[in-house]
Length: 228
Image (cartoon, rainbow, N blue to C red; front, top):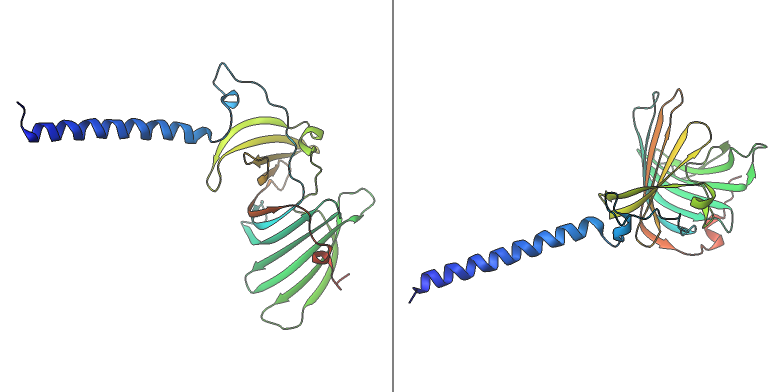
């Protein structure tokens, strides 16, 4: 009859092997998340997906890192409101000694449509009275309809592991002559990140992340400002 020591050791080894097998399986499942096997690149069951509709109207925290040959690094974070139904975006941002609210009106653009009216209310260096500035600028975030990816002929570029969201679907498309854009979607087809790279003389790259995302309509009072 085996001693209690050997019985106990055998049970420990069996339990450990069972746990390791479970952990191995869970790890494999986590790499695909909620996405189907048909989206695994090197699978005989792979099926080319069609571009999904995305949630176009939302508010969220955001952060962006942008750089080019003239700017080593430009990082900004804050809260953003994106409303295609009202043709407006508001981005509240905090920087080094600066607080600002930036209002983009997509109903007021230059004749070629490339630049949008932008009113900025800012508090700089601890002042108590805001400064108002108005420009026409290329917006750092675009408005898009639900079928934007299909309209842009976006190509499925695989499931990637995002450091904030885990597995995300990626869709890539070109804009203009030298701009490459990638959208990152969570399993509910909510935009959680987008990157763009411009292969022109400035060699610009930017990555923009959204988190604490609240999909749905936005109150019009959010876009009210005396700054014009």
